[in-house]
Image 1 (cartoon, rainbow, N blue to C red):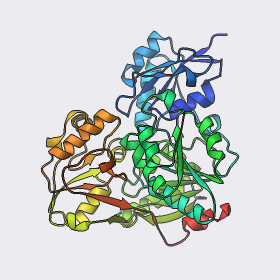
Image 2 (tube, rainbow, N blue to C red):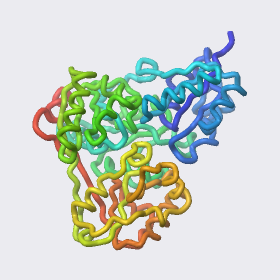
Image 3 (cartoon, rainbow, N blue to C red):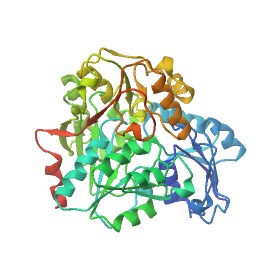
Length: 437
């Protein structure tokens, strides 16, 4: 029987998981290629034989998404599977139209086909958009479970931007593990705060292998979601964050709306800085699409170790990269801190940008007076370092969760901004997590 020739569209995350869980050993299909987008320099690689399985002894090539139409036609492709996240519903259908006009079917893979079952309880923390506050919420969940006496292991949504054959299953318990695995800034932003709390983190490419390893040392597994993707595992409690700074986005982005409709618990974050009208709009969305969900209201207050370094100073603000790029935010915690603690001026970083950092501003034109902490590889980290050091300012306000000083040398005073989740009123996360005692 003729195998169904397939392309998987992705961004080095769900695309590999969809292949591993559904297509890898499925002789009804022939996956002829992956396409890649969103993340710089992730195309041009190969999904290696060690991961691709017996049906693909030579591995599977990964091409830029820009080549999609020609790949469909040249390879006589029957279907294209869309498998990445934080994309507007309209944009998903633009992708579908490209596929359909090239003659192939367009397909989305759901939870039943892609979720793995754990032998341990699983709590998932996901969101409707990037930059809503998943990281501090995940840390809060881990903190509560630890206080219950549980051994907590976090499994992070994938960020395999290097050699895939070396990233099948990664375990992070120390800063030395981050160095050994040559982690990017984007990876460190997610892993360092867990390590600081004494939480072991797993990540990588093969989430079946990862799950088996994590289960060996966990009482409870916390799925630390990425972008607005839904979990790779069946969950016993699905916690989803919504953002009143972007009202309406909770039902306009894929697969964020899926998360909202699946949620057991919805956290409305940032209520201390959003308008009452925006908060009400988000509440109405929750009531319309998932009235059975428990709703928690929360803030993400910011803390600065040395606010005197900001007051009256001309500052450069560095923020979390993905929040600003495909998350489409125009500012983050660093900008809020600079304003709160009295910076005399927030400088425009664009005149100082070099290399791929300059290209980032050209691609994401909504960015202006903030610098995204792009660091998808050593070369880009060096370009970020050069951009920061070229900037004519008196201090750098770092709103990204990591210590940038560990991966680059900044030649001017730097102030770190930290933030944590703070529930307002009842119920709280502690209340809803009692079922795991």
